[in-house]
Image (cartoon, rainbow, N blue to C red; front, side):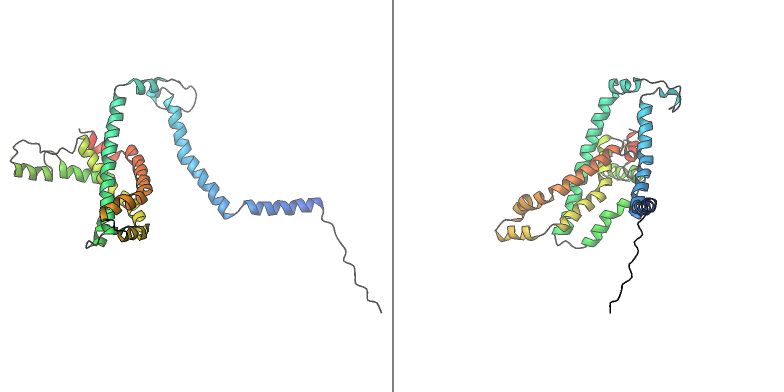
Amino acid sequence: MTSQHPLRELHPVSPVAYEAAHGRSRLRHLINGRRVFITVTLAVLVYLVIGPFAVLVMGSFQDTSLGIRIRPPITWTMDNYVVAVSGSTLYKTLLNTAVFTVISLAIAITIAFLLAFAIERTNMPSKTALFILTVAPSGIPAVILAVAWTIILNPRNGVVNVVLRSILGIHSPSGPIDVYTLPVMAVVQGMALVPLTFLLVVSSLRGMSTSLEDAGRASGANNATIFRTITLPVLNPAMLGALLFQLVTVISTLDIPWLLGRPG
């Protein structure tokens, strides 16, 4: 006795149905959370960055005496660039910016490194409190810092100058420290950069393995040699990264130069 198996009828898929199913699959592949997030993020960045930048560039080639125009008639000119390049204030501004940047970065990186090294590589007491006190000013806006330093170092009625005049017997109305000068302004900016620079350096110092330093001590090297030949070379990338990051910050900063530089 033979049993017959029913033959399954094969129904070929029509091209229209295949294209519809393939289109739905492709649409589901394109529309997912990650792609939507990336698309929205790029659109926001284009709107917030490229738009204002394009308006800025376009305005630099216009006669802006009556404001920036985005509709005809537009008066195109190169006068803005001619005035900027040929003006005597350009070179003075570049020199002031260079001096301000160098002093600020030198103070920030030196203090930040010394604090990070003291916390991570020494047995000094109250390291947690020192860490908190170093990072705490990062939450204070630069405007408030500038105002606070003005109160402290004002040449006439600043707290420090009042004390120094009484100690040194100075009878002039102005004290020996003038917060409205370029060097003091750079010192204030450098102090404002210390918290973030400290975080960048201390994280690298904390992640650095001490086995290299221990190997140096086992080989008979003293602390100065270990610091010069092991610690500093290993930390150079982190120090350079913090320096470049803060370089952009100093050049683009406005709060402290505006509040302390204009009166001087």
